[in-house]
Length: 247
Image (cartoon, rainbow, N blue to C red):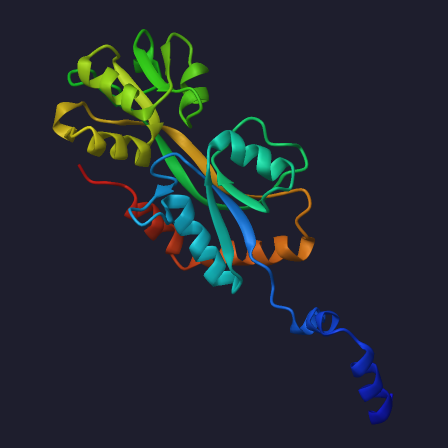
């Protein structure tokens, strides 16, 4: 195409079409749902999304050199959004309800599930939990781990606050959840570690970055590479440590 032809083409081409040329178009932000469960997600006093998963989103965006838009939603909504392509991404521990074509992109870290006993109760093995009443959140990370143990009297609760109050009042022998959640609950309820027994680590759960069915393969590859950078450089470990409250 000579210069005259090029100028004629430019004059006839709508400005909007020219602005959408692939080489001139900035990559649109990925949309990531952050679950509204402390300390994984919440709102700051200024209304910004914050928490473990929001920090991971920021770290991934920096490593991938592409913005990630975060939205705070209930966990049921996060599952629904990623299943139906209403969100590109979510960061979750293992939960039921994800569609088969929602694929894991990368494991970001592993979180410890603890059982925190009331004072005077010794928990040092799974066998030591038999016959004890242990509470966990119905939608929480410790639910299936406790529910599947033989001989444990399992008490389901709906909120972290109610679970911690059951422990403080002595109505349960222990509570089970991810360490960060238990420390957050203790801090929010004004509890001290000296009020309870020694925590027992029940196991590890993967904190995973999930992609919607419609997410492009190139985006998956870019995010997997970003996740690798976040873990290799120690950023993931620092995020987890930041949200493990000392009480």
